[in-house]
Amino acid sequence: MEYFTETAATYREAMDKISAKYGDRAKILTRRSIRMGGVLGLFTREGIEMSGYLSDDLYKRKKLNLEDEKRKIIESTKNDKTLETVLNEVQALKKHIDTTISGVEKKHSSIETIEGILSENEFSFSYIQTISDRLKRTLTIDELGDINFVKNRVADWIGESIKINNEESFNLAKVVILVGPTGVGKTTTIAKLAANHSFGSHGGHSKSVRMITIDNYRIGAKKQIETYGAIMGIPVACVESYKELEQKINLFQDADLILVDTIGKSPKDYMKLAEMREMLDACGSNSEVYLAMSATTKISDVKEILRQFESFDYKSIILTKLDETMRIGNIISVFSESNKSITYLTDGQVVPQNIEKATVRRLMRTVEGLNTGYLSLAGEEI
Image (cartoon, rainbow, N blue to C red; front, side):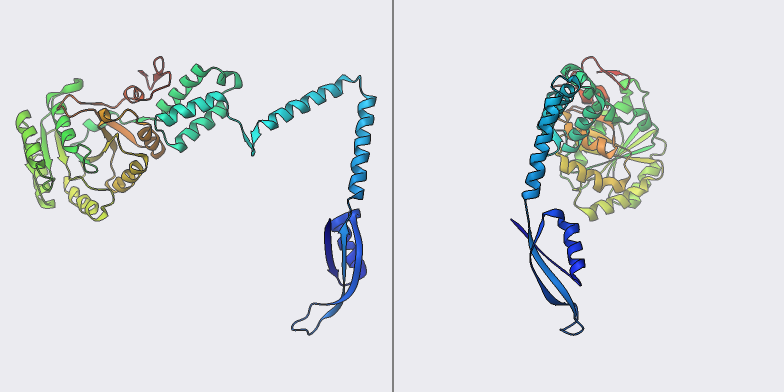
């Protein structure tokens, strides 16, 4: 049984308060005079305190009356088809509610299948949720029932989320600087780019190319790039300061393309990154920065690398080591959510073969479990 206690200045005010709060269910048990208000016992005034309980009799009577009325209505409309229709709709609504758990509608089996496929491909949770919400919002129940149709649509959406930086944009730069964390293959990538642009690979025109490295700390780095330069007949310069870098850039002004290799830095090494950023200012206003990142990088590290190298104002990304992983949903997810584009892909150590222009087609080939064989994305047959 539920009890209550209310206070007021007068009996009438107390009754009004009880009536407003509890209605006809309120039953008064006691009332007594009290002193109300005041400070430290001073300036108090007389009042009344009333206690009681809430009776269930009225509720039970109303419930019984309601059941009575219900029974009468059903008896009087046994042959009424309208009521039968309404009851059927109520049952259907109940069935729908039964499929709802804690206010969240049970997912369609096709949506669960897609979420499983994307999870296996290591897409981020937020990216998967975006695709799932889009399926619920866009497709009809009949369309969701056709899993092949659903896979096709999801493949389309993933393809649309991949941003490609056209290689022609790369070709317009006079000086291209490659930055990125340690161990992503920057030096080898620089050599591949030098070979392709020097020899006119991928259908392009041959250019006069120069290479500069500021990586004099990693053992063998200088020797490695000098060996590549000697094999390809491309001049190589090694510098250690802003002034030396500025001098070499000016010396190589007759070249069509100058490629600058940098020191691999941890994204957490803020001071070293800042120092390198200042040094690279020597490359001048005709330079563009590209960020090299390994396809094997986990989601949290991808986000951190993108954030810490943001100060270099990099134009696009060169995705390396594509041959070392079977899943790049992590890369597609974070690049899409960060609005980052990809220019080149590398998939091996062989110079100059293991590099290619980034395309939606090539990236979608890494996504397993979706029907990508018959789709056309960004004008490309997948």
